[in-house]
Structures are given as C-alpha cells and as structure tokens.
Image (cartoon, rainbow, N blue to C red):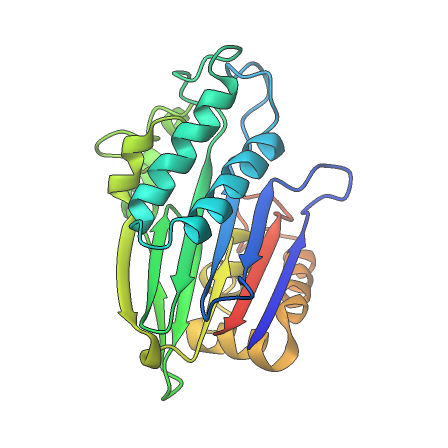
Length: 261
C-alpha cells in the first residue's frame, strides 16, 4: 500500500484552511481519506468567533473518526454526523444561521476488501484510476453550472447562493446538506489508485489547462504530490496578467492526498 499527503498554504503568513487526513487501521484491510477546503469569508463579521481553520480541523477530525469507527455507516450519514458534532461544538457561542458561517468543501473516500465508497461535496475533486489506467473524476459541478453573471455578483460574495436551491452546497452547520453530496461505490478491484485534491491543486487542470485528469493523477503517481503543487505554483507566478486566474486568489491553499489501496 502506498499513501502520500501534502497540504501547502497559499500564503505562508496565513493559516492553511484546508484539512487532510488518512486513516489506515492496522487490524483491517481498508482505510479512509478526508480532504476539506475551508471557505475563506470576506472581511468583516460572519457570525462566528472561530476561524475557518478551527472549523475544518473539527469537521475533518470528526469525519476521520466516524468513517473508520462506523465502517458500515453510509458516507452521507458519516458527513451528517460530523456536521452535527461540529455544529454542537460552537452553537452556544456563534450564529450558525449566518450564510457565511464557517464551511468547507468535502471529499471523503473509504475502501475495504469489497469496495471503494466516495462522497464529494462542492468543488474539490476525487480521482479514481482503474486497472487499465483510465481515470474517472468524481465532481460536484453545481458551482460550475451557475451562470457567469451569478458568479460575478454579490450573491456569491455575501453567501446567498450557498446552501440553497439554485445555488451550490458546502458543509456548514446543517447536517441535511449531506443528502446533496455526490456519492457512490465501485468494486475494490476496479480501483488501482485514488487521489483527492482541493481546488488550489486542481488549478493545474481546470484553471490553467496544463493537462487532463489522467495527466494530473499521473504527475502525482510518478513525481509525487508535491510536484503537482510546485507545477501549480509556477503557473500562478507566470500568470502575471491574470489571464487564467482572473479574480481568483494568486495562490490558494493546495492539498493532495494519494492512495494505492
């Protein structure tokens, strides 16, 4: 079995708001991975006394524990339970109904001798490579399907398109969001490798067009997860005219988890 994890902040002066974890119980023949991308709020109050990094650590820790300790629990229920547990940790001090309460994208995968289960919520990505080296990208494309006019509007900035019909969904304080996630399972023998990436790393494909998903996974497998992040950083530095980045951050937190189960 091979595993690799890298998570690099977009700005060394700021906390990394991504979260990543691998759990490989010694007694079993399976394991799980968790990758979260915390949503950076705009400047000003957002109803919570805690940082986004605090939130992703709490939610990620709960997802890691539940995905292993409750091996028969569907991943959507694992996410719902983790969201509930995290909300309970700060409900007495924070306004969890605020549209910009701390929240995150989610990738959750769990493998056993029988199957590989997966869950994706919002714009982080899970890549599954088959024995024939064909790569399937598991995507939640609701954000990409929004009209460009909506994406450029204040509705995205102030959070009113988040976690509502006609918008897109992230893990925040409402456990019912778990039912919105993209979920599925494939037989274990059909998965040679899997990789989870936050959008700071997927930029190599979806922002800069430097390669496709199969090429992305090949870079990680052959050169290492750190090599993919270094390639992204080089592309970001070269895009001084912001031709590719547009209004996006120059550098974003970038996380890659790779597993050959």
